[in-house]
Length: 315
Image 1 (tube, rainbow, N blue to C red):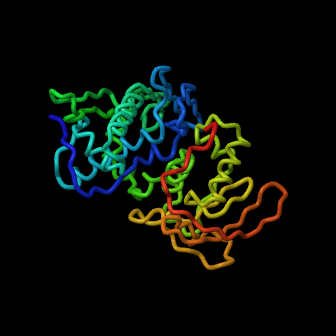
Image 2: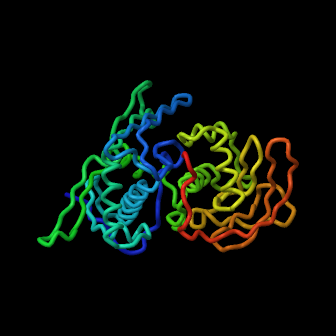
Image 3: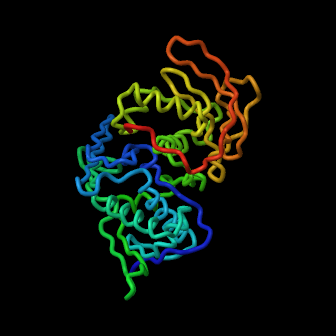
């Protein structure tokens, strides 16, 4: 029996495994170069076809929709399954996208990339050196009326994804404003900060080379660093301080308000309570040190995501 997706207000939920590790292309251009990531006991291999290219971080919105539907239904005592059915309009509405013919076409292209991208990973595998291989969508099909108009979509999510979604310790609620972020790097940084920042009062930090490795980006390290600095300087990401060789962030906020931590007092360079409320167009202060240049505090207006940004080049 297929699980019929529900309508109405449903909180967006994301898989922590997908937030923490490099599973998707961050570029809007087609990527066919595999992601081959190894760190300790974690290994991830993501492969794409030349016809469709690798699934992107925008395509992953469909998986956020699926996870949100499954968790909400389970919490209400309803039966769920890996086989899901919904109308294109319902999926696009949840993601905050239009219902034009172009939007429908992009949805189908995203489903093709999710179905054709293959993943092999050791994450959540009980046996050492064992890998689980799957596609983000095992298969999908579209139902049309006699006039060729879409009536519904059926898709099957993989068991690896489904099992992770049903585990409460592996799911986080995200802010709907995430869907308005248009840059691939900004989207990836938000998910990473939401996953690792949590409720830590003193923020969170990563070595830049470690951050570059975890992104799966094809961009050279120096270009990746510059892209991060540009994003932070423009306050397009939930990040408050940029220092070489580490990136420091403020607490990621509560599950119901992950993008809006409390603004810190003027002149406070610490991460605790740092100002990152770019959703409300407030201003913030942050400290930046690049190379041997001295640190300085800069006051910038924080733009509301407008939907007009572009993904950083070469990512």
